[in-house]
Amino acid sequence: MGRAPGLPSPRAALTVEVALGISGRIGSGKTSLAVVLAERLHCPRASFGDYVRTVATDRGLDASQREVLQEVGDDLIAAGWDAFCMAVLNSAGYSDGSVVVDGIRHADAAQTMRKLVAPIPWRLVAVESEDATRRSRLAARGLDDAETTQADAHPNETGVASVMASADLVVSSQSTVAEAADVVTEWLTMA
Image (cartoon, rainbow, N blue to C red; front, side, top):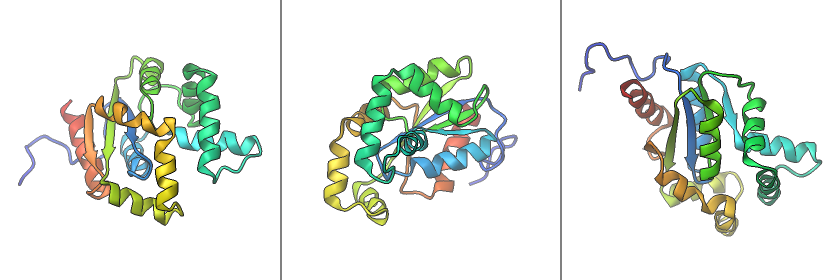
């Protein structure tokens, strides 16, 4: 199947200004996709997970423990979405223009990011993953089935389904990261 004349290769650098939120369950491939998309957009990648790990470490906590990260995330949410989201953007060196925001798990986070990056258009991409694939990835990170089930039950994870349902685009993590990034890139060039 050929490409329509005049359409750029999906792997070419994008020139469109956009703020992309990446949502998905733990182990779905959000971060891998976000890294590739930030490279293609030549923009910063802001990450809720990276920021929460940094805050945990700064507090002298064990940032390798999911329960610790979830508690720190809860504290940051309690302090207010505007402050939390702005801190995530600032931690990536974002000031304006395109940005990829990894780890959108709450509708309030998506709405706040939309407001903070305006007038840059905000688009939300959900990464779907089959449960067996996701659990296999998490096992490779050292989480057994019981720990994955426990992590999935935390309120910071249970809201992900509603966020994903509101996504502008859904991609499958069953494809390669490059293929998923191609889908997003092509979608952005058509939008």
